[in-house]
Image 1 (cartoon, helix red, strand yellow):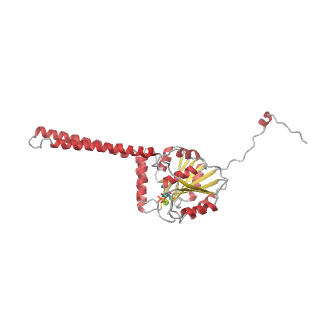
Image 2 (spheres, helix red, strand yellow):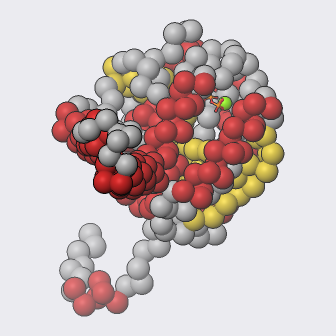
Image 3 (cartoon, helix red, strand yellow):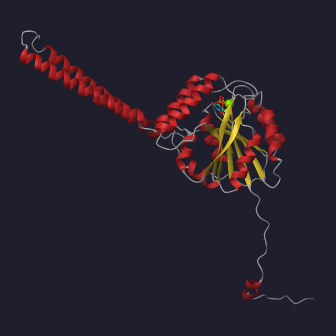
Length: 341
Ligand code: UDP
Ligand code: MG
């Protein structure tokens, strides 16, 4: 029987370190889905095929069902059953694209997180290029549209809007960039710490800083269904983008107020002049009275407008409602490590 050898600490220190197999890196996909029943299976197939070109990486696909009304959830549940990489986060109602992305980011566990649309307008193959850019050191990689195949109206409004936003916004929001991007773990966590309600995710990401890199791509047509961004939703997103990252509208109100006050002052001078030098022409008291009323009314209305825009923001912040509510999380990979929240 071999006598057990008691190794001294010293001996242990002398041993060369055991080379542990390097931990495989996990890439999460955050995939918002709203009424995509027609194309979601094709999307999943293409995404899976693309991910299989990188057997050295682990993947998880987090589909966020944003209150779809067309059976997308049933299809997603079936996909989750057949593919252990898939998790489905089913929101309790439609919270909108930006909230769906936020919910997905909260559920992502990867070392890198990729956000992309599920209507195949963002080609899954391009996400492999985003991963490559991340591996060469970038922390945020955004996919920038070289071209897009949308209606001329959408192309025109998007083109104009992104340039306007770029000009007016306080942070440098890159033009022609949607929410298709990759973020590493650190920047994802920082983004998640922003809990503001009227969110314009691409603006928030731009405001984070860090090492950001662009990868150009050609945006495809929708494969099925129609855009879930009708004019009203697009205008709201556009307004969120402007009001979250620019004080230009508020400044414009203030300028308008100054202009009104100046005009009113000129009016008062005119009224006084008329009264002093042509007392016969003017109806006594009337001109001055009218100008005073208009002046005070104008100033008060404009001040109220400025205060109102702040009160509106305070109101939504103070409400403190949860940003979204999850109905359930479909998860077929039971051995997965617990969620990081
Ligand atoms: N989407 C969402 N909730 C919504 C609207 C859209 O999750 O309320 C998803 C939709 O499924 C798609 C992405 O957001 O994956 C982009 O939407 P869409 O294609 O309609 O926008 P567009 O490409 O026309 O700007
Ligand atoms: Mg689309």
